[in-house]
Amino acid sequence: MSDYGYNMLSKQSLEILLDLVEIKLSTIIVQDKDDVREIKKLRNCRSELLMSRKMHSIRSEPAFQSMAGQESTASQSL
Image (tube, rainbow, N blue to C red):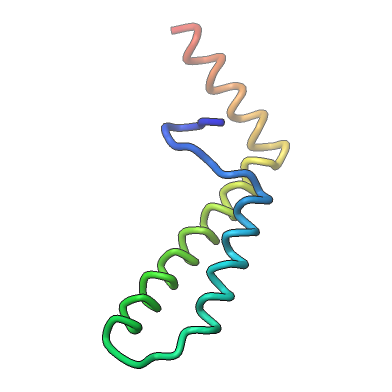
């Protein structure tokens, strides 16, 4: 599934990945700078996954789907 130049994961895959990142974050014991870097990476990953989940929800709304359909029809007529 590809819209606007990027691929989206399914809602189920996003939820699974979010759960895995949360589990990893909750189990890390900071012992050195590498662990701190790992936490930063995981937090960034979590933010990206949350944004993707939000975008997935917006794309699932009927109003967005009708707007997307109108844009594709307009671009085809050009």
